[in-house]
Amino acid sequence: DSGVTQTPKHLITATGQRVTLRCSPRSGDLSVYWYQQSLDQGLQFLIQYYNGEERAKGNILERFSAQQFPDLHSELNLSSLELGDSALYFCASSVVDQAHSSYNEQFFGPGTRLTVL
Amino acid sequence: AQTVTQSQPEMSVQEAETVTLSCTYDTSESDYYLFWYKQPPSRQMILVIRQEAYKQQNATENRFSVNFQKAAKSFSLKISDSQLGDAAMYFCAYWEERTYKYIFGTGTRLKVLA
Image (cartoon, rainbow over all chains, first blue to last red; front, side):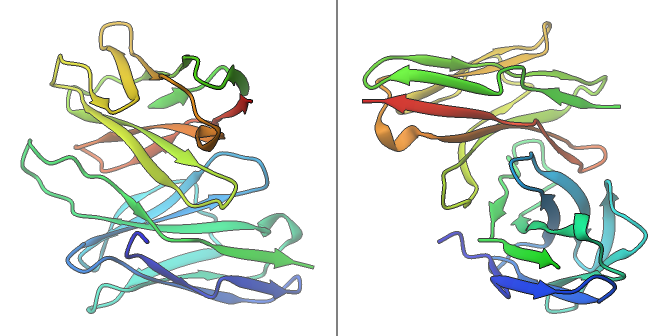
């Protein structure tokens, strides 16, 4: 158990719909990352938040948005869903330390499997 | 742009033997970290080993070790005494301090043969 929780575990919805995925980072971790993993593919970095602010942006579609709340949990919102959005969505958290000796290991949640029909 | 390349989509190794998974990356940054993550069939991502770019010594974690060649931008993972439980997808990943971006390779599927 990494200490990162994601809900729901599974989500089945229809094209055109909107869903929200939730992530709670490990206690003390300020940084949250979101990734998309399509079937048998690598991880695509979507977006990162640090202490409530967007820190880095990857290949995130305009239909997708995210935020990190004051209690540090994060939500990924996916709208106007398409069949191709079906994937496993991972959240990861880490302690981002500016000190050079930090190692920034990411701790991954179990993922949310999204199926768009 | 930074890239991470894993040129071996699939590898096989006999149980108890040694296997090396390849990873190359491209960056102009000086401060970065490299990681190998394992993803078993459960799909849970598990950190295997990490390497700080400023460290010349290769990282080692039990049966897992890396060969970090900074000038060549190569970061291979060696698994010794392979076990059935090592069967998984292995992802090489890069993280840089300046942008905080994580970049993952496309993965290598490792099969361990009994």
